[in-house]
Image (tube, rainbow, N blue to C red; front, side):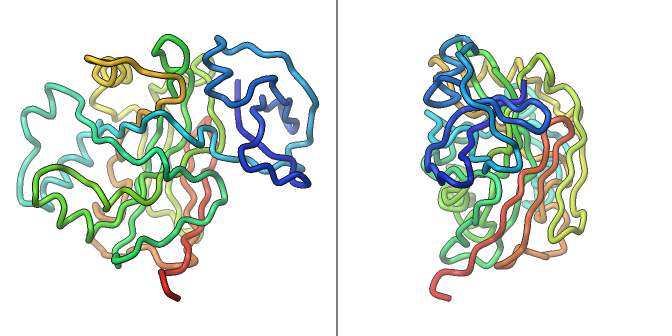
Amino acid sequence: MRLCMFSPKDRQLERGWPGRIEGDRVIQLAAQTLQAFFTGGGKAREHAEYPLSEVRLLAPVRHPPSVRDFYAFEEHVRRAGELRGRGVPKEWYEIPVFYFSNPAAIYGPDEEIPYPEGSEELDYELEVAAVIGAEGRIAGFTVMNDWSARDLQRKEMRVGLGPAKGKDFATSLGPVVVTVDELDGSEAEMVARVNGEERSRGNLRDMYHSWEAIVAQAARNTRLLPGDILGSGTVGSGCILEHGDRRWLQPGDVLELEVEGIGVLRNVVGPRPGT
């Protein structure tokens, strides 16, 4: 199934309704959110149908219980290490590591992303995210953009606790969640475009750590809740930092992250604070 949160364009609902997409139609599901739908085992009565052209897709999970972003692509880890003057730590191969991001800063398709105050080096990160459903299992996959303020992050990382304000301002999710019966997360072409120009390309099959290992690590000594987000980490070449050309994002830039089998997550960069 292809699942979404949506609002009819003539209603402008903030939270929206959960829906199932069939071709060019969206069928409303009798649940408050996709989290509630997953908690109920992925079953719900169906309500009205709407033409897809007459609805606005929202973030599929607006208020996740948690956002864990992993570091699962070796090429990205190697390149990031080279930029910091070090190799890939041996521990990286032993366990899938992650950091917690901000569940209160989630953005959906076509939303404007606020330019972070105090930064001049705004970056995108091309990722796939697993959405947790019932009983701590993956319910489906969506596209994820782990926006990064590289200059803020650079200072923070020198302290040794990982990113904080360099990542705190925005994470984009969408446009839909594709359930595991249609997309198992093992392979998918991934592309990033800035103002129509292709800037990154990779494939989900290049993940070193499997989704099974990622879920097991996330659930270790705790429990996963419906709606929890587990990011794959950035695919190799999937951010400006790796390119080394310092072509950082500017206000008004249009970002399109496309993942085969899921769709295009599009956002526009907002103005700098105070302008």
